[in-house]
Length: 130
Image (cartoon, rainbow, N blue to C red; front, side, top):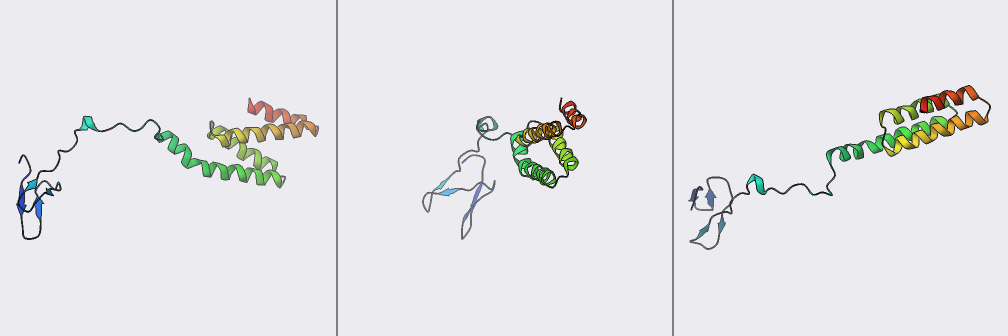
């Protein structure tokens, strides 16, 4: 046997390097398989989520909640608060689906201002969206 030392006691066989040994019969002790070398360690699967993807996934519920809160403010006619939340989502979390949804809502609000004849408000939103 190489490297590991074994000792028998009344109830079990103990391997000194704490690697489990396999008993093949009452008298024979089979040495454990060698540990895998570092170069033999498999690389992560290509389809496994990357750390950044996991980070985005963990933010999604929070971003969805923020978008919903903006929608509530908008429904309650608290347009300035809704606009603030939508811009925060669009600017601080660009590239997320919620950011795109927030931009769509901002464009919709600007169009509503324009339709209502509030050209300065519409222009202000359009310029900020550029």
